[in-house]
Structure formats: structure tokens, C-alpha cells
Image 1 (cartoon, helix red, strand yellow):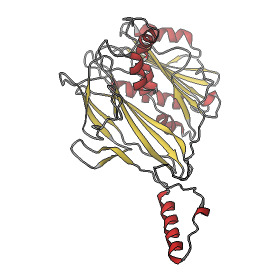
Image 2 (tube, rainbow, N blue to C red; image 1 turned 90 degrees about the vertical axis):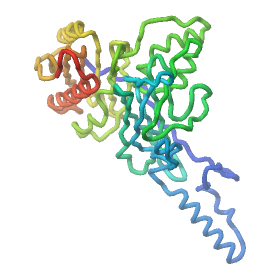
Image 3 (cartoon, rainbow, N blue to C red; image 1 turned 90 degrees about the horizontal axis):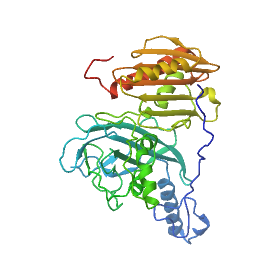
Image 4 (cartoon, helix red, strand yellow; image 1 turned 120 degrees about the horizontal axis):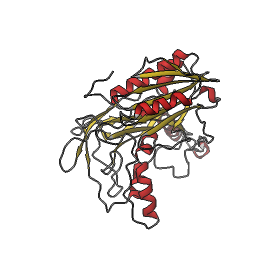
Length: 392
């Protein structure tokens, strides 16, 4: 029941601002050689002083940069890189709303003044509602000394060409019609003459994105090998009508920290023990610089409601220290193995089975684990409202 800790880590690569005799055409070279400023005379000395002060003021750290997009489609004022972001996704031909599309937001951060270095990234995952509407909350609580340098919004739905807020798929040129609020996303239906390999490069990375684009990998590989793409099964997690759902949407690092008061960082991504499929997805919160007992892992199965109880019963026979509680969803249990706590639950109306594991240094008590499981179940109910047959 251990959380299968991956071995690789992403190194922090520092990026220094280049300086040259001619500058970098972006701003003043803040570490330029002051020995070059040797004017003669009182006026020249004062001009040099003014120039130096201007250079220093231009290099002052700021948490806000001007966004390259408008605040609204009908406005000329720039928007905010931090958000919030709202919009509506429709079919470009029929103008019918597109429900259940992935809406993925990513912010890039940096710190420093003259010497700049990357400061990580933030992401948010959502989906469009029945009316095709989406909302991405404002990015708050930036680390001290950091600023947002870039924001990108991705909208992805199988059967359509993906949408990016920064560029177009047709010619990879810059997109000029994106707006922070009341944005309109027109999705064009996929055509067989388009390239899956090119589409995957256009879509990019991200936990939820990788899970939903996995079905394209086989077709892209066949295409690169010069073979005709196959018509295989839909490997998209949460396939079918209505809302999709993947594990990355059910729990965030902020949820964990709010409950456990953990003050460190996490590296997140799918578990490597089993690939995501149409019926299974996972999310691993690997504590940076800490042993496995600080990790949290989430596994989710979305099955036919008649089959979900079978998977839940399998977990009951596979896991040690099971105690059935039945206080979450249709049925639930707690489990323990060495220094790992586990909580599992079944939701029959939605066909959902969830297993969450949490190390004993992160979840100091079984109540901590149970609270996180309740948070997960709350997200399940919000993402998959039951309209037939009831549900909690």
C-alpha cells in the first residue's frame, strides 16, 4: 500500500539575464560595467547619475507584469496575469456549448532583479459546465520576492482541436483574441487529415493534460513511423457523456497543507506503478527532501456503477489493517500498514472507487487522513452531480 515514490527529480535551472555591449533589447543591463560611465564635466556627471538611478529603478522587483491580453473582449485595458479568468467554450460550427472540456491553467514564476531565476510554476485544473462555461480562480499567495511572468490557458476535449490562449494550432502564430474575462473559445472539430504528433506538441504537458491526451500517443507514434493511425479504444479517463474526472482534480497541495500544516513543497504527478487508463487515474504528492512518510497518494477508479462494488471488495481483500467505517459515500474503510495510513470509499451512483494513502509524518492521526478523504469526496460530488437515482 506504499505510495510508490519515483526516483527522478526536476533540477532547478537558474536563468541569468544576459548582458552585452548593446543590451538585450528588453530593459537596462542592471549589471553593466560602471567603468564605462566616465563623462567629463558637471553636467555629464549629473547625466550619468540620472542614468544610473533610472537603471536601478527599472530593475526593482515587482509582483505584477503587464498581461499580453485584454481584460475583456470589448476593452483596450490589459488584463491581469493572476486572474481570475472566465469564459465560455462552444462548437465553432454549431455554436452549441461544449460541456466537460478540460480547462487547464498554468502560471510561470520568477524571482530576482538583475540576476533572474525561475521560481517554479502554479497550475489549476477545471472543466466546463453544462453551458460550456469555465472559471479559473485568481492566483493568490505568491512566495515573497516572486512575480508572475507568463499565463497560459488550455482547453481540451477529445474530438476537437485544442485551444491555447497564447497561440493558434493552424499556423502556431500568436493568438490576439484571448481575454481574461468573458472570453469566447471556439473549438473546431478534429479532422482525419490533421497530425496527432503535431497536436500533442501544441497541447504541451501537465498532469491532467497528460492523462487526457494519452489516447493520442498511439496514433502519433504510428504516424511518425509512417503507419496509418489505428482506431483504438478511447483511453480518456472518465470517458463517456457528461463530465470527465481525473485524480488530479480531487486533491491539491493546498488542501493537504491546510489540514496537516505542512510547510514544505511537493512534486506532483501520476504514480508510476500503473498507467492511467479510461477507468483509472492517480496523483502522487511527493514531499521534496523528505522521506516517503511525508507523501500523499491518490488512486481513483471510475467504473460502471454495477462494477464499482467489485473493485471496492478487491481492495478490502488486498489491504492490511482494514476497518470498515461506512461514513463516506456508499461504503468506506480505514487501513494501516507500518507508517502509511489509508482511507478508501465507494460511491455506487457515480461508479467511483477511491483509495488515498498518507504517510504518518504528514497525517499525524487517522482523523487527518479521514479529513482529506472527505475533501476528495466533496470534489467528486461537485464534479459529478447525480441527477438520476439520487446520491449523497
